Image 1 (cartoon, rainbow, N blue to C red):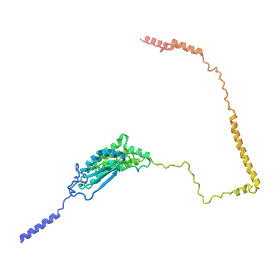
Image 2: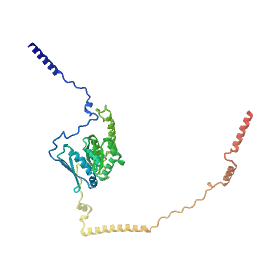
Image 3: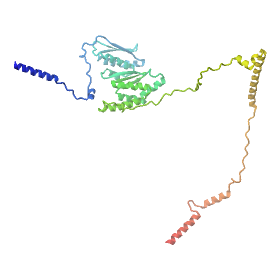
Image 4: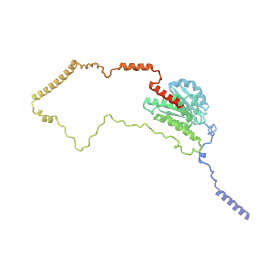
Length: 380
């Protein structure tokens, strides 16, 4: 009995010790837990994950423009072959101008119909089959950005869309390299295929470009972010201090009217009442005149106006008969004695110049030179 009681106490002590022992938390950095290890991929969805298949049939249809008919007709066998691998049927209706995809009884992946729908949408938006078929992969997504309704003015819309493409497609190529996405600008849409993080950046750049923000600013920011992502120490820090802050320089100024109306000073009193026609006639005395007198005054005023108009018309007619003013005849000025040229003095100068050789010394300079030479000889 004693042995059994002692063994029971030992077991109880062991259990209490086990309870008190708590699992120690591992000293791991949070950034390591958040980051995905290199080379890791999500396991592919196989038939073993959904052996019974789908209960209902799902289908999607989309229309395509007339100019895509020839290309779709040519590459449709390749589309059917790619979709048959995932047990999805595809039909092309050239009469209606539509493409349809639908699941079958063998389809096991429930999300493949959504990817098939995106495939036919991309084909309708002028994306080549080689690029569009990538959407069937698990790590690839697509985004069709509608830009037609963002700018009202047609000319402005075309300019901004061309700005997104850049000279010889250089801007679009730079954007593709930075985001790891394939971008296709066609009509009123921009189609992008690539990883989710890249599609988010592409959408931001496209929308900013249509809002009159040049894509070079966003490309510069993406380049800086790409370099910062390489540094493991900066992953958990804020990057705002490294990113450039661009200010809007074109401030919209309110247009001022050409004719400015100056407001009058406010007064509580109403304006004076304007005089009526009777008040004016009473002030001038016309009110008390007879009808015949009033008629005579009107006729006199009309005649005075007619006479004034006639005199003006006559003056304009007489202007044609007025001779123009003649310019005064300018008499030639006599040569002044002061400005007369001294011919004799010029002749003497010419003679001296002939006698004198080019670079030769004058007579005074020759004398001075001879004197200096004699003085040197005496010293010796």
